[in-house]
Length: 485
Image (cartoon, rainbow, N blue to C red):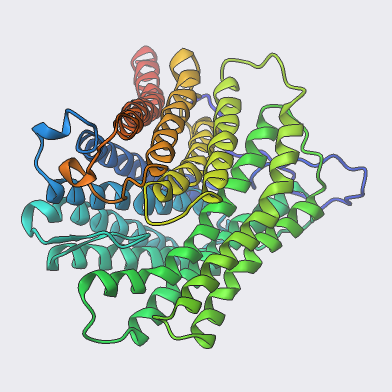
């Protein structure tokens, strides 16, 4: 007997919006089918997070001075890194996108559309499981390609293709069965557009992956092949994650009782700006050879210009919306913590990106900050969605501590990498290959290890809080049924 609300409240009827109308950034109303689908995607997201956490324990220990001497060498580190990155970035983000895109589906989706939606989930789940198991059933060389690192084995490639087929199915369904804006250009309409725009960016990324596969030169070594193959699509995917983060910030500030000082039309314009940069992706393929420096630089330039232009004003508006908030209820404090921690990590990652010089560990410091900033926003979004999906709302000290522990640990992690990068410590190496000569290098990597372990605990706490909230609903329903009997 579930007494929690099972819909996401919004203004369903068209209304006239003026410049003085307060903006209400809430997600659209949902159906029972879309909520069931969102729940299933949430389980995949949690499984990916738990799996990446297990591999990240091995990953951090392999780079921590003193402890790394007790572990296998570089091959062990690289295999752990491949699986950790693919689960914590690719699978986690696609699964969370599946949650949010499911909630944005039209209520009139056909039975065939519903079957297609579940097929996408099955393909992604099977592919993710195959990627996690591939190192143990068909070992191969670990390829440290940017965006989608690989294990060069038939089992891993087959699993990744299954996952890609699921992702393609999910994106096609979202493009065909969502309303880009809605009946009114209000807060809900702006959020609808943001979610739809993130799916458009994902479609461009899939196009880029396919384009790269068709035109990539034959006979390249595996390292160069996968690096070129994933460069264009990997950059395009960053637009998808960024748009999901911006939508999450707006929803969470509104949920906390804050008022974002931007009209829906301005937010919609900023979403357009954030999306615009992704259309430089096909231009890079048309203008330059895929293996050229110009091709690589155009992708990087588009990501920096398109994303940065839209993020800065939205970030300021979010801070202004949160500033007046003082006393919040127990269920809202974790939401505010997630937003603040997300802002902190995203800014830190961006600032570190400006200092990159050479192929050292400042590069992972930059993208760990930015990616974890996105992850924290999506974690807060899941906290907010839980009662709207029929579960218990997270509250209490652990739910409040989790964003700060995860974010604080990652902040120490990237500070340690930034510190070590100043000494020239190389990326994608571990153990004796790091060649740590000075006390400063050792201290920096030691801080990295400490922060990484704290972040792992924070990530596992998130999974524990969410699973407890989900199981709490089941236990309460069973208790109510026993009482009624």
